[in-house]
Amino acid sequence: MFPNLCRLNDATVVRLLEALRLTVCDELQYVFRDAVERFADMNAFYANITLRNWAWFFQPSFVDTQSVCSKVFAVCSGLVTYVEPTPVCPRCGAPTVFEEDRSTCFGWRYRCNARRWNAKDRRRRHVSCRRCRGSVMPTVNTWFGCSHAIGQLVYLTFLWMNRIRVAQAAVDAGTTTNTAVDIYSLCREVAEVLISHEIRERPFGGEGLLLSYNMA
Image 1 (spheres, rainbow, N blue to C red):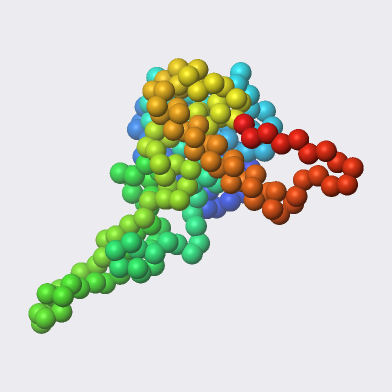
Image 2: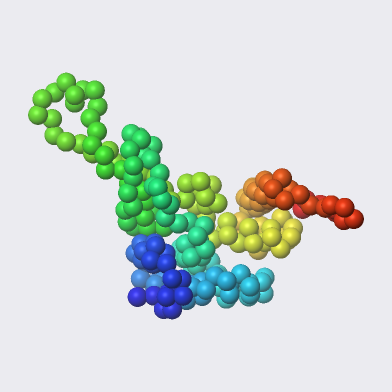
C-alpha cells in the first residue's frame, strides 16, 4: 500500500501509518504518500537533512494544511509509537487496547473497554452492562504532548538545533514569538537533562584531558 515501505521493516509502523492515512483528506493523500516515501529510510534522512533541503522533506504549510509530513515523520522516527504494555485507563485503571479513531490527531488512541458500574447501578437488579470508555492519546508523555501544532513544533525544534535566534525562528515558522520562546525553553530543558545524565553515566575529561563545556 505504501511505496518502499518495506525499508521500514516494522509491521507496527505500517499499522500506525495506515491509521494516520485515514485522517488525511483526499486532497492531501499525495502529500501523505510522498512523505512516507521520503521518511521510509530514517537513517538517510538524519544524514542529509539541512536547512536548505528542509522544504523537500516537509511541504510548506500552505500546501500541507494538516501537517501531514510532520505526523508521518513522528511515526516513522518513533517519536509517536505503539507502546507495550499499553497505558492504563485514567478512569478505571484497567488496561487499554489500540483503537483506530479518525477524529484524533494521529488516527488512533488507547481505548478502555472494561466493564464498570457506578454505586447506583450496583443497587439495581438486572442492570445492563456498561463499558468504561476512557482513553489515552498516543501523544501523552511525548514531545508532542504539549502542542497540537505538530508542524510548527517540529520545525521550531529543528531551528533550535541549528542555533537560529528565537525571533527569526518565530518568523520562519509563522508563529508568535511567545510560542517560539516556549518551544526553545522546552528544548533547553530537555538538553540539560540529557547532558546531566550523560555526565553522570560517562564523565567527561580525565587525566591529561581538558574539558570545555558550554550549555547553549
